Length: 597
Image 1 (cartoon, one colour):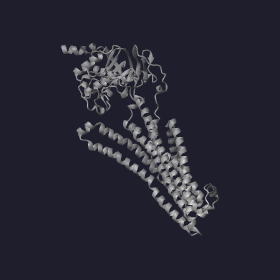
Image 2: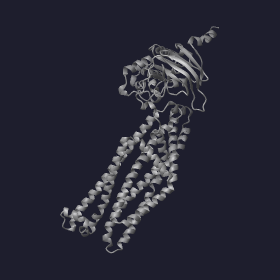
Image 3: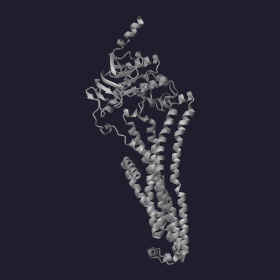
Image 4: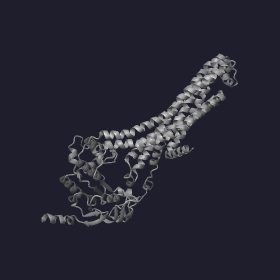
């Protein structure tokens, strides 16, 4: 019962994640299941009079229940029953078959559509998680949940659940039809089959749960192995470590396949034994009926109806059992998927009327402090700084001094643990951070490029049909890469390859700068963005940036002091605090004196 309750809770959680539209579709599907079950019952019920008309037409002709139909069809002789009953049996069989095919198509359509909804919902919720959550996650686990484990939910949970529901209805319909033919044999056969399946369920339940845990765990590890091997392919090729990564992959893939095989075997193997038992049951029944008076004449219709009923019932019972094993063996993957579906969305999505945050004068940092988790040391502490609109501010400091973290907080990617940020006189909060981020463009040290065209990478995230081509050209000019792009045969339609592999480091950086300029933001943040450029190119790019609008605020983390020569002031960080704030001239004075001496 404990296992059933766990499944019930998981399935209930899954139900609430289905949209209203999908729930309505499910109820329509439920009606179709009822109709298909009714058609199945009629097809089996039509067997008995059909076989009766073949073996003993007079008995059917004299049957009380057949009289209304006989009068309607104006039948006067028993032999005239054969043709209409044959047609009726054929029509009932065709309708039942057509209904089952339709039910299968609708069930699969519903399952895969619902799976697409779930996958998109997980992806959307994941993209909206705060940066502090993203940096602590393993991307392999997230990708596995979004894609592979959602597939498991479709194939091993949604479709089996629908199959289980429809199978229960079919079983009840078939049993009702068989019960009217021979109640004793029906109860004995169904009871025996059910007890055997229940015994198998008790024996295999724990193994299915263990297999499900292994499938969930190793699915993540397989994707992790693929990402790491292919993501570091340059080092893999240089170091010759292909076999090491193949070994890592195999150590996860082999247990995954074996667990999947085990579940498949447990779910499929009982059918063969059940088919043998069904045939033995029909043989025993035929022997008993044949020994009675007029046994053969009575036995044929009953045996024919029971044989067709068994032919319907046994596969349905097997489907029910197989569906149960599939659901039981997929609990862990379903739980992982539901945990991703349960990710909270930011409050601003539910507050579209949040007041717009306007930047006109200054950014003020007041006693700002930050650390990653309550038990970790402070990364920043007591930061007080004012950044005027239109100013150029440089940030320097040794590795680990908190430069990038400070800019992440200014961009609203991280929330300060102490103190806060004001934009003009308005406090930056979770509710208005999206409005603030619309004013910001970011150029990181490592530029992420999609495997698409130059134009699409500059207008990053903008649908192709909405890209402003003139704006792309202007941004490329300002980033000092337009001339290079124009020299290529396909110009702005040139494909950059995965992660920009077809471009040099300097070209990738300048496309990143062009992307920031395309956004036409009020604040541009450069996180060592020019470190890959040579001195001459860096100087050209920085001059272009400095000639932009005076209202544009630029924040720069730079490794080379020369990058910051046009900054209004330079903030030096050390041990998580501001050590000093100087102009470029004040910082280079000691170096100038040393050189003069």
